[in-house]
Figure (spheres, helix red, strand yellow):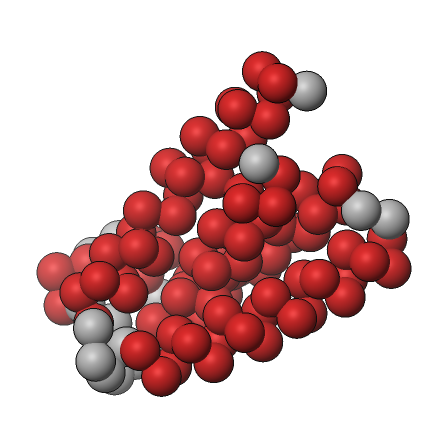
Length: 112
């Protein structure tokens, strides 16, 4: 479950960085404070930190960094390739990631 929480957090962070481009911002969300580029990048950095925290609890430090870099690379490649084909699915999964991270974190704490 720690790995699933980490991958969800890393997926969400890449989606935020990808969406931080002003051409990709959703017009209905622009009134939020965190919708600007800086806010999205700060949230992405926090999401990477959360993913690294989950990976650090599952692996040693070197392995956690290597897994995170590999996961971000794979997530980024798949995200960029699949967004033009299935935009609603990919962005819907990105919006589902924060609750999934919380759910996986709660499941980890229950099962140890």
